Each structure stands twice: as C-alpha cells, then as structure tokens.
Length: 320
Image (cartoon, one colour):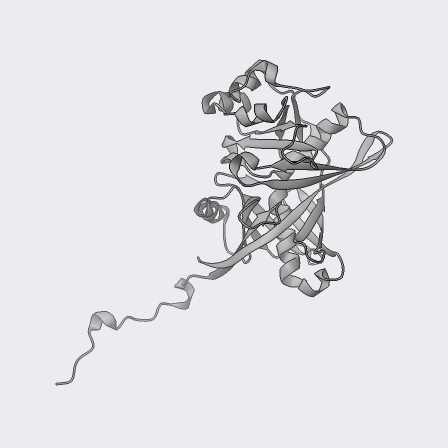
C-alpha cells in the first residue's frame, strides 16, 4: 500500500508579503570596557517599515533603559538616522544610545580605519545633528565621544529642597555641598540635578514613587557628590527616572550633559578645556564611567562633549 500524504501537512506556501522580516540587532554595554557592566543598549539596524507603536512594543520586549532604531539618513552625507525609545516613550536625545550607536556603526562599517585613526560618525536625532568621533586605541575598548547638539540651559526652578529630599527618601540636611544646590537644566532631556553630601548619603537614596511622581513628574533626577568610589574619578552619580520607564539608570549621558550647566554656575571653571570623570551604576552592580568635556572661553561654556568606552556583547535577529 502506498502511503498518502496527509492534506493537513500539505500546507500552501506563505505569500511573500506575509513572511516576517529579518531585522538584525546588536546588544551593547556602554560606558564600560567590561561586558555585563555599564548601561546595556539594544540597536535595531534595519528599522524601515516600523511605526512608532511597533518600535515602542519592541523596546518593551527588550526591557532595557533605551532601544535604538536605525534608519537611512534624510541627508545622505550623514551616517544614519535614529529614534530612541525607553520602555514607555520616545526620547528626542539620549547619551548612552548616541555613544553606543556611534561606536557600533564605526565597528561595523570601518573596522580597519579604527586601527589607525579616528572615525567620524554623524547621526540624525530628533534633537538635531549629532557629530561623533570613534577610536580604538591599541589594547583598549572602542571609545566614542559626541559634541552636545545643544548646550545645557536652565529650564525652570526645582521643587523646594524639603520636598525633593522627601521624594528621594532623604532629609533636607542631606542635600547640597559647597556652592551646589538643586537645579533644573536640560541639554535635550530635562533633569533635576541634586547634589548630596557624600557616598553614604547617595547610597541611602530610595525614591518614594508616589512623592516622586508628584514632585518630578516625568523628569529625570540626577544625584551627584564629589566623594567617589574610585579615587581617579571626580563625581559619583545616580539617576532615577520612573516617569521615563527607568527606575534607576546605570549611566546617563544626557543627565551628565545637563550637569555641565550646573557646574558652570556652581564651580565657575577657568578658561580652557576640562574633563570631568563621572562614575555611576555602582549601586546597581553595573559600574560605568562617563567623560564630560567642557570648553570654557571668557567664563562661558562654548562646547561640551560626552563620551566613554563601548563593548559589543553580541548580535541577534528580530523576526518582525
């Protein structure tokens, strides 16, 4: 007897238009030279055809502080266009996605050039054009820096100190050092900047979610102190952003960029170039290091940059 094929197994081929697209992505760790430290990032390379709703769902699936979606640039002279999503909303600009994406694109498109010179990467973000420089010193991780597309500026007055302290689980006496007090600045992402006394104080911060929402809404809150875990660094920081879908962030370039405005007011740095090394993520077990560059001329901030090392953890594919 000749066996007959079951009709249920004789499936008609799927029409081509219904087949899922293969969208490659990379997972990176940013602001670290060590895999599984720093701030993790997902970058989806081929995002054409994805609308905002779909990108938001994919960002939720990755469940990282931010996910980047790459598109062809509007202007072909630029490297790429990107959109940045947290798990709850799209951002016009963010630091660790910019640094990570620039490093990844340079590694993918110009690995040989990185061995001998700096590689320029120009990204189109919602905030505007962001110019980046990537290099890979011998024996070191890939390093990427970008010039701030917008210098920090004050964007309002923060809440009273007693209310800020209560929302962070601290006392009013815990806030401030030297000339530093709470401030509200933005270099693309509004951030409440909260100086605190020391490492022990910053470690005790525990946001009260109800008070936090009432006090800060969707604004990021960046705590910083001059006492550091590693002596070669200048500042120790933590960032809380529950309203952005990020309870705590291991490394926050946009907040460090906003901090440049407060440093100009409270520290009044001399003319010339300055580098501020900011450690973050230690309380989360994901130590990170951000380099904030300041170019001061006639007492004014003329240029600023954010940068640090990037590690590519590995590739993957979305069938979407």
